[in-house]
Length: 147
Image 1: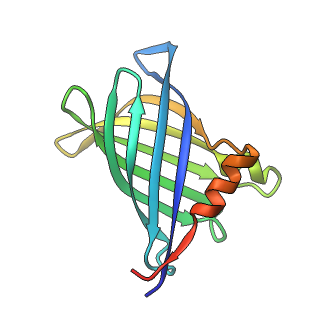
Image 2: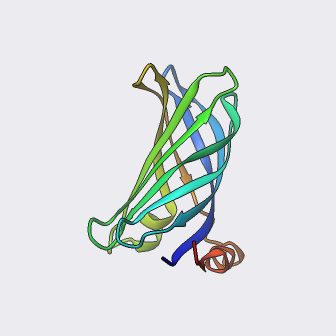
């Protein structure tokens, strides 16, 4: 079955709940591959760089429910510099009143995954740079895949 793949680069800031006044930088690059257009769940792999937390590969899913539920959900796992497993979870809530802003902004939380329990440790927002060249790069990265 044919599918679709794309590359997305996001960057922004986050803060740890223990230090809410200290903003830290974060950057994420993923390639998402949607193999089954009916399920709308894409597998995602890539790289995360979060200041003082991780410089690591990520893997997980991006659930594309833009037309039916007006949301795109991200669930990505990675290992931090301290060796613990973390998850970045975010959701773009799409609005027809502000289509560009809601499509490019990803509010997220980061949690530590301990024995199957997820405990939130940080929050932040990343954005896709909608500059002319970046938007072209995103459009060029979308391709049909035979899978």
